[in-house]
Image (cartoon, rainbow, N blue to C red):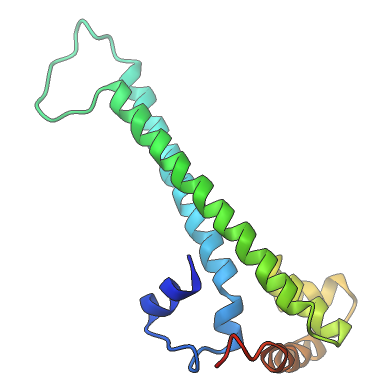
Length: 155
């Protein structure tokens, strides 16, 4: 979801957006892709159940979709998913380059793992053998440094 649309959707003006909200766009877009993938699988299951019916005994109903209509729906959904995946890749690249502006390496580590790899702060603490309280504290400082290093985002 492009930043402008995200701001519109949630009624956030750029100067009101917090770094946490900005960085969370990755998670929101990833969740949207996951939802569309589940929807595509639902469509596929329905299409297969319709395609497996014996056409000789099928009762024609008004307004029902035939197998090729379902295939078209699945194809359209796959295109939407591909587009969203491209958006996610672009968003991750942009945010990663913005995180790279952060000078403190531990701040970068927390931001990348939490927002780009979707790890919880507890997982980060465990994986890198840090105390959870320390990582939680570092997360707050990392967000402040991210905001300071990317003033163009938080006008």
